[in-house]
Image 1 (cartoon, rainbow, N blue to C red):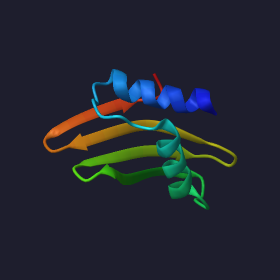
Image 2: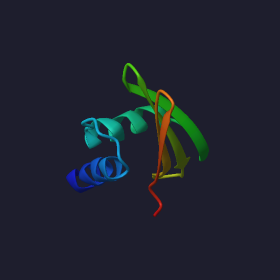
Image 3: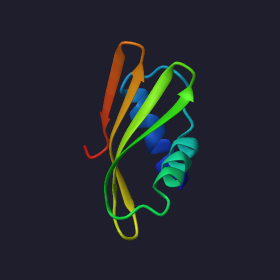
Length: 85
């Protein structure tokens, strides 16, 4: 799991988001939001900071999920991260 957490952190940092983000916290947040969801595509929103919104586009499957896109919104600034690339 540590490898997944570090990959999340790296993608976010490489995209230009300057604040410290914990990959385990992001992963756990996603898991909580999709718990008991039927298969399909969902848009989930979280606030890790008072002035920053994380928008997740997640595809939920029977036994797993795929974080497709993470959009970080900080004021007028938007950072879009494609996790499928």
